[in-house]
Length: 310
Image (cartoon, rainbow, N blue to C red):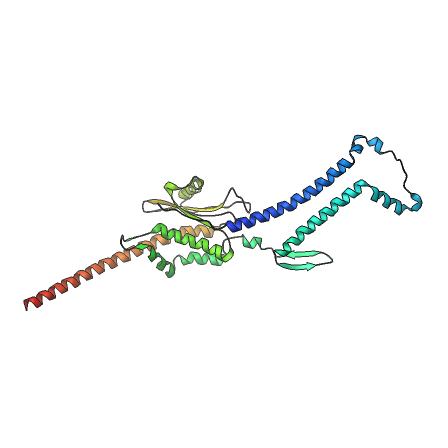
């Protein structure tokens, strides 16, 4: 029994969680400031709420002789409610400005205008987490399955002593290669796994059964960008000789499409056919070599007999 597993996206997952936490902290700060303002107003004017008729009684008239503007400003400044609201607005402005300028230290600034206060930052998130590789690179990986280089690589999985090829090892090699390409070129985390059906974990049983019924890879993407309870998956159930195997791609941050489906399907077909050809060619070479050795031994024996007879 052989099981392969590789985790490639811990860094990306941490970055997404940090981004989510940054946004939640920003929203939480706004809520705290708003609640503080409302609570301060409620505590200050609780007497007004309890006895509104007493609050309507005017004990002192404003100084009208100083002018209507001075009287209005005096009422505004002396009002406890206005001071509380002013503090709340000031705290809110500071909080918003703080979260506007923090990204400048960690991201590339594309545009900045002072008087109209315009900030424009490069947004790389959609490009970063849209997919494991661009279309050209992924199609190149699919075509490489039938290249001479891949055929040469498969010879390393042939055991001359037993005359058999390690099919599962070859499948694992190409699964790892696809995941490594996504991680090295774009930093996208893709995990892969290869299980025998008898040891398949319960979390993969449902998609593996769907794939077995349809006879093709099964793909399932989540609607949200990140969900710690669910994964984006591509699962393919296939048979090799007397074994039922399950090949898997999964990721929290990367969404899969038909290219990953075709990659798993064609990977199984190409590796099975090419390894079978390698086994056949090596078997023919072994027979030819054995016949050549026997022929050489016969000729040497016959030559020795002639010399002795002479």
